[in-house]
Length: 230
Length: 230
Image (cartoon, rainbow over all chains, first blue to last red; front, side, top):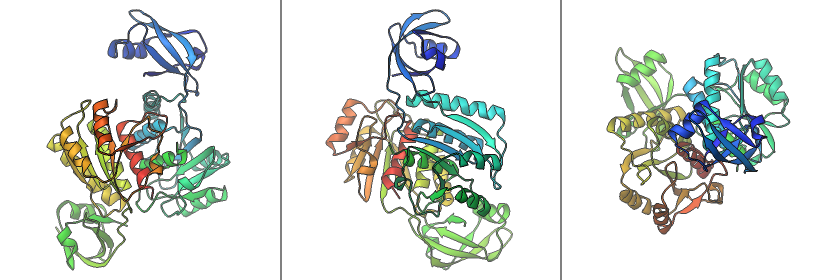
């Protein structure tokens, strides 16, 4: 099965033109032929089956059919994460997208407020798009930031239910439930006492992942998997 | 806290000499001073507290004291994994080591039997050692292979209880329990029907990780975390 991410308006029509990189990938590299079935998704949770109808020298046309399974998790997890180094952040984005994260907010803390340049954000977007197709999801997580600490606090405060990962917490992700949750992951070295106090004041309880100290991206990946639990 | 991996014989004595890269890292880069406390581990599950007693121009001496927490999980998970590409395999080794894996066996399958050269094995060993120190474990997972499919089958057969990750399986890792377990992770595209039949004959039941198709390394990381469950 191949999943292809297209524009939301395109998914609503009867057919869609495939050009550029998607055309090259599907019809040059993977050599799809007329009649091949492709699952097309709009990045907003909708999916349809489609069939290759025409293959031209520079574009191809897919005919859109019935709706397809969304393959989305029941729960929604939004990650708030103090970004680790670029390669580690790339792993975090790829893996949590595969697992089913809904949004990734890059936040700042006193212990880490690194800049994320627009080139890196564009790369993270490409990684996430590719992971949506790879894992056959239909929803493309939004990735935004980095936000200042005070903006981060405002964003987190909007969540009815959110959890702060903390190596010293006894409560496990499996013990908490909820259909829409935020998960806050601090920097290596942890949030400062003041930052933790602010998060607690907003209603964020702490959950832990066991005795071993995990890197930021590992904690984010495993925390997402355990909170989603499906 | 700093965790330092030393040789098993060294952990049994009253003191230990630190030289070479460990000396440079601890006393040049991290500038530890006399009296600093270091948790030393032997890679076999044992840990002791130690204090910096003497710092020379090229070596330092730690005095060994009481035993320290091992920070090891209760269960033992051995991974059998068809290796993905080098950078993805490196992520797999680092993350599963942090999470508490006991051993990683690289296996072959019809759909992927890539060679892993000795340089790559050495690099994976360094990544695993570093992850043991980073996560404050005390056990260094053994990494070996790649094994041929028939050798892999023999190795897997020795496990009293093992599970095969399969996207189509309904049973979840959280539903199975056991103190010592093997987890078999196939290549992208999955094992062949014949390979799956052989594994089933050896007693390996299938467990799944939900509707989304995960890359090999993501499945290995999340499967390990869910099976360990602590």
